[in-house]
Amino acid sequence: MAQRRMCRHARATRWTLGLVIPLVSMWMLRGVGHGTPGRGQGSKPNIVFILTDDLDARSIRFMPKLKSLVVDRGTTFANFFVTNSLCCPSRSSILTGDYPHNHGVITNSFPPGGFQKFHNTGRERSTIATWLKAEGYRTMLAGKYLNGYGAGTAMAVPPGWDEWYAALQDEEAYSYYFFSLNENGRRVQYQNRPEDYLTDVIASKATDFIERAATDSRPFFLYLAPYAPHLPATPAPRHQNELRDVTAPTPPRSTRRTSLISLDGCATRDGSRLPRSERSTSFTAGVYSLCWRWTT
Image (cartoon, rainbow, N blue to C red; front, side, top):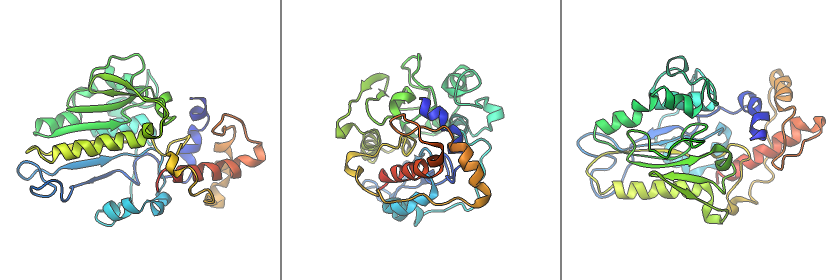
């Protein structure tokens, strides 16, 4: 928690494209089941929406499946503008289609933002889930919902979602282990076994959902939101020793001062502080290597 607070400015100013640009993808699934590929009832497409957290565009070269299945078959937006790249305001905009000044979630924490603000103002009553549900879609969310979700709130599933596997308490989920999921209104606790790795858990649930939905006449909407590669960027055990020699790119001279300021005071994964002289090199390079290990 403290580490995320100290590094929030680093996330906003480094070379990443932020929350949604590289791997927010909507596409028609091809070859699902034995019916008409990528189609549910009538002409309505099946939709898979993948939302990563703090993924930078350079990482795509380490993700061959993403490139072959999505990039090479889809559309890449060379120009992309976001009104508020902070996590919860942006996620609220994705769910509602509204600007932050309209949906009212302007930060990650309550009262001006966070899940509690979104919930208290009734925004959950009209979202992409409720709209698609009304159009006959079968819906599912797995992974991160909104910042602060599960902190002192009931286990009710928001309107519009047929299946719900949202992580509770961001502090736990960001560790990638020892997290809890609200699984359709029931709290399920995970431990630190290799099979408990958060990204793998929600990927498995997404795969199961698609396989079951393929036999249904209804079209489906899957919202998959892994926490990766957000700090501490814990890789899966099978990727622990990969890409250790990857180094961070040097930012342009015009932004180097900003990078030094934004990284000042950041902590390492174990909570220790780096000497000031090393914060712009060792810390950045270490984070860059870690963030890439979960992608292979």
